[in-house]
Image (tube, rainbow, N blue to C red; front, side, top):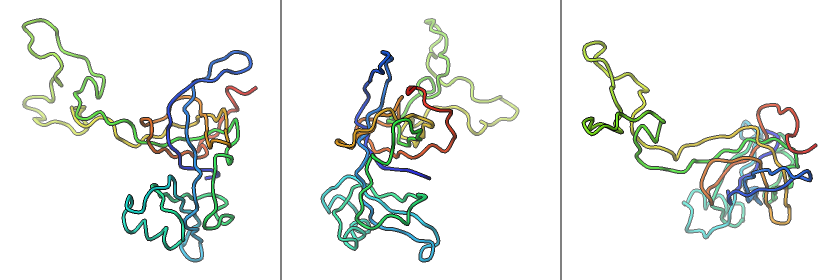
Length: 217
């Protein structure tokens, strides 16, 4: 990947273009991320950098992670992640990666965990139809028929049934960076991204080619 950074979702807002167009944006606190370790092809078999984000007290992380920061003589960070960047060799331990690596008009993919909604029925989880609402029905929001009686006499795999809804890893592709605020380490990205306010997200260069800026003329 060309560019990548760890961030925190702060919420959503909107901005206006000079011609008055409203752009809904997600506000992300992007970095600064501290380089904790630099991996090389000679020593590790591949090139990458391991970065940390959001400084916390040492007792807030497990011992293996705390040991990495102690070895590098760096402040303990809440989130650790490896990034296989094209220019991994240009970084050194202790370097900072900020939102300035991105520019207005860049297209990015944003990965995060969606909001957990707990155990949900098929209507909320899958958008299925409800049953008859007549008084005699007695079966309004159930899953409905699961399988045939005599053949095949079993429920097929991947049948849409009640269960855990949300709290899953999701990536939204080809979102556009519409503003970069280096002073506050903030990225404004068009559209919505996964996760609740305060959740950790991962922003990287889009893996698909984009056809130019939608908002910037």
